[in-house]
Length: 387
Ligand SMILES: Cc1ncc(COP(=O)(O)O)c(C=O)c1O
Image 1 (cartoon, helix red, strand yellow):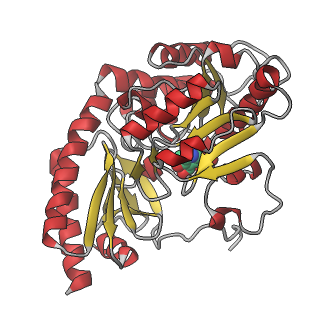
Image 2 (cartoon, helix red, strand yellow):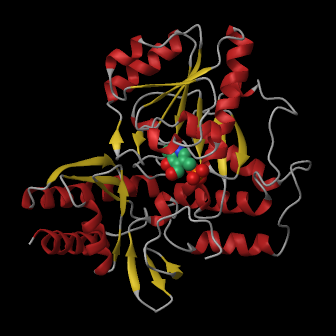
């Protein structure tokens, strides 16, 4: 195998996708409720995005950020009009977006509070990426092991713990960085009151509130961005995954009073926001807004959660159903892996999160019929594993 051994891959070779389904090289069809890990939010090969991309493909692929790129400016405008941010920086991935956020927090902290104010406080079980700074920001030992020494300036508090807020030191802390629903860590939604208290502490004490919306953003949780359901406004937030419907693109968004600390020379990226990537991003966002996709995700998410609670009532090993919108987790006592494999044998693709959580991430364009199909397969899979 000429590829580095960095992934435990499922034994499937995928060659085609359309809507909620993918096909293997053998011609087998699967209901894809992983959506490329919360990325294909409009389903596979969405026509509107495909058309805009094909058009751009014939015009200009790349030109560097030394020139103006019309769709880059249009996408930034549309993101700003639909969020609390004032300015956007485009990059290529989630980790790169979070790297940018960490750099921006350090610039801000030093300029506003002094050289000692470079700490970024994150939370246990969080996931922020695989680069050296973002794995240092990630509150999981298993992601960090072997890569020490970690980047200096990170500490980790208990998620959803009110007493953790008192442990913040405003003199040394530039920013707090968190996911509104911890995705990789086990589909754990933030407690509403806790997040509001944290946001208000940050505001009073001049600590930046930075939200990692890489998994929760782009309609996934039932609003364009998950923070919008919590009655708070971050100073900074990051996007990737669903932003380009599968075309690689990331974004760092900030309020003007923070964004202004980036000046020419502070930050950059050769491919960031190139004409193809921003065309995919612009088409994705336009389609989402014009077709009320976040609202649909909310309604379908409630329906999916209800159906999953039906499974919980039937199988004692299901301890909890939790999530927001179409980011749902089934917490099981044991055998999560076996259930995922049994579902795959029955042509349904689903994922892990943490050690005992089955994560279900349908495209936001799925239907109640497809949800029913998935829940029937899950039911059969539980029967197969536990009987
Ligand atoms: C919340 C969160 N942040 C950051 C990342 C890293 O994104 P990427 O894999 O695009 O670097 C992920 C990826 O799973 C994520 O879920």
